[in-house]
Length: 206
Image 1 (cartoon, one colour):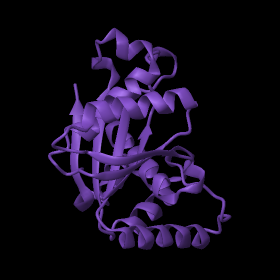
Image 2 (cartoon, helix red, strand yellow):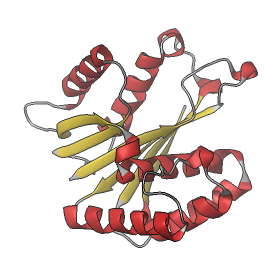
Image 3 (cartoon, rainbow, N blue to C red):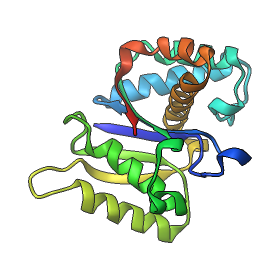
Image 4 (cartoon, rainbow, N blue to C red):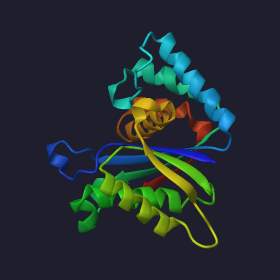
């Protein structure tokens, strides 16, 4: 099992000064490496079809609506599952979550992976973001401590990767952006409908 994770929105709480109201983390779950390869090829072929350079990175917030539409239609036929956690920051009361973006991010990644109805186990996880080295090490240690026990392992390997070089993490970005957009505007609801068969869980956290 290989899981690709990305987020949409920001962890800030200055909602009156530009911070996003919603923060979404999405896990894209594959059970078959061949399916990953086929999906990656389809994304790269779409990039060429759209006359984008081979170095082009798909990112939801930078994409036009027609590109978002084409991207989601391209990936929808493949075999994968989507789990998302949607955080409405107006409902967060914890001062610790409000005070440090690292705590906020780590806490919600942990929740997404922990309460997974046994859909994620012994997984290899790839998460977008280079981050600084100290945070990466403490982040992985925190997740191992919180998620892996002597009787159950949610993941066996975790890597933070640069999305520029990984079209599957770009796919997680496009889906996370779609889920966030669906909380805000009708065109996002219509985009998310394309992936309806792939969405196994969407947790509204409050």
